[in-house]
Length: 458
Ligand SMILES: *Cc1c(COP(=O)(O)O)cnc(C)c1O
Image (cartoon, rainbow, N blue to C red; front, side, top):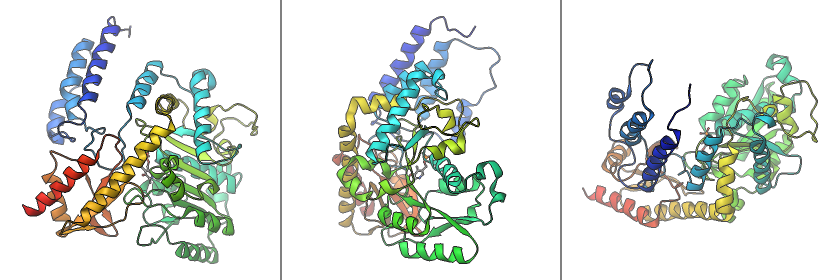
């Protein structure tokens, strides 16, 4: 009943559209011109009771949906940290959807399960995690941190998953920098720690956590009847791309007996590069790491990864049955995370890693870092523009002297050419250019700098 008679033709029609979209991705506006209202007028309709011809629907997709989508892969997309999905990753995702595996159990996705196991091994290898480490692919950094903190809680307070938070004697306190991503608050809220128990520690001039203030806060909590539990280090803050001194934080975590989680959703991918290895020094000491393959491994969303230094903690928090952890039992991913039915996120990563090799991925990350540096240097010569950070990764924050109003004016001024996002850093409104797109070249940086000069003259 649900078979389409001309499925072969439809696959080709869709592929044709994708081919065209991909080859023209860097030309024209990044953001569609239509307003939300106009799109609602165009797209809203009654739920269909009777279907219609698939080719007609594909045509509608071409006419109404493609032109009203953001060209995330465009060389001129410099917003947020949505990296341009790599072409190999896209191939992998298309193949993956064709297969539609559900590797929560081996039998629901045999090869997909084995490949996920292998990819987790690859990723734990690049972070120098030991033999007993493990992890799971999830939707992204948000769920990755949620998954890690749930496992950390069970690791530190065995039985809490069963007995609930009220079984603990004292409230648990967590620590991260003021610049941490909002997904950490969400995870802490969802897990029932209470958002108020997240201590947001001050930062230095480069937006890295102040280790002294962190220690003082831990000591104070101890004195006040709280139980310090976990430090969440930032490896690439989402606004300024700042990387905390992870080595130092691991020493503090050990000194006070705390769990160390590293939020490397954005910056974790830099581990593939020489500069990244330096920046992330000490990350192998972490108890858990979040890293998003859909950020700096250029995989199409969704693809997040959570790694635990000791795989058993994921199992103890998320197992389905009552069986005790056995390191020799092959992984069934349903026991290592929150989801049951789940897509394979491994197949697209498998495609990308095999087609490019880590060498090519590393070169793309290095290029992003270089462009950020070049842009930051170029800004130095422009009067009336101030630079708010010295980029450690690939995000550059700057502001016109006229503040928010002038910044917004500039974003409108360049909207036909580039898409950048407004941000707030150190209490100041700014514009953020994040270089996380492998199609962006030196010429685009020069063009953007020229637009800034032109805007200042106008
Ligand atoms: C993007 C990001 C997150 C959230 O990850 P999602 O993949 O969007 O869920 C968390 N932390 C940091 C530092 C990020 O950059």
